[in-house]
Amino acid sequence: MNLLTIKQNISRYILERSCPRGGFCFYRLDEPNPQDTYHALAALHLLHVPYHNEQTIQYLQSLQHGDGTYESLTQTYFILLSLKFLGSRPLHAPAGGIEVLANRILSFTSIHDDTPRSLFHALYQLVALYEEMKFDWRENQRESITQLLLAHHNRDGGFGIESSNLLSTFPAVAALRLLDHPLASARIEPFLRSCEHPVFGFTGKPETSLYFLEYLHAGLALCDEMSLRPTYGQACASFMYQCQNDSGGFARASLGIATIENTCLAVHGITILEQMGIL
Image (tube, rainbow, N blue to C red; front, side):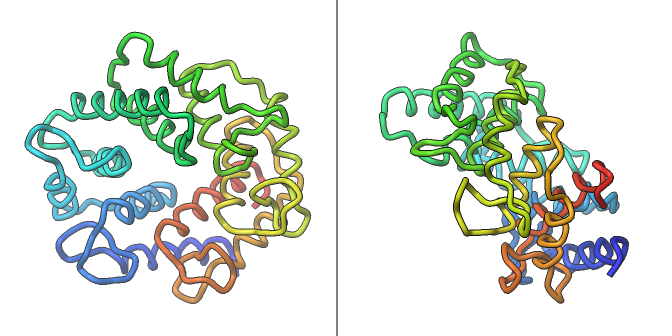
């Protein structure tokens, strides 16, 4: 199957999961959610498939509270970036609510020693929101986030709470680079190379035998972030294609159930491999 057909099948899979009331739902009921909606729009954007739907805009706008806040940082990230894909804006100014979320995250991590594993994703989403929405940082916030991330930069070059792993390293590196921290590729590359595999492209951490789409995506995204090439580019492509099922969507493994989120990860991985000239 050629790459054009693969992309056409992906587009069909995503568009078939749009909801009558607006938004997207991977199990094809009229029950949209921000996560599926964001990943659907992000994938369509990468595929250069035009999509504009007033019901989706209205659905996303309806999820904001009257004071401009949302339920969580993750929901804020999904909704605001989805609206940006659609060329629209929220009904109420969101900056104040995001500042509350930023203070909550920074105060929690400074008080508790048992830092949550989701820290890296939360900090990346926070930094990406500020950068994408052009919000102004409060005094010392950028420095606090930078130091918090660097506190979990391990000797092997990766990031992680108990040990380094790709799912923590990619968002940490991406956040630091958005914060203009001069993190050299040479400091990250040893860990990245230790996660490479000649058959599956990437593992989640060194010397492990689990291979899933999210690990492959994190490895490729980290390569892209640090201007590095994967050693086993064709293996990356081969394993990724194995994760696509008859629906046109992608699962996290060859025999799994396709989801919009995994399909978005695959589209991003395919885009990176194309840009590198591997596909």
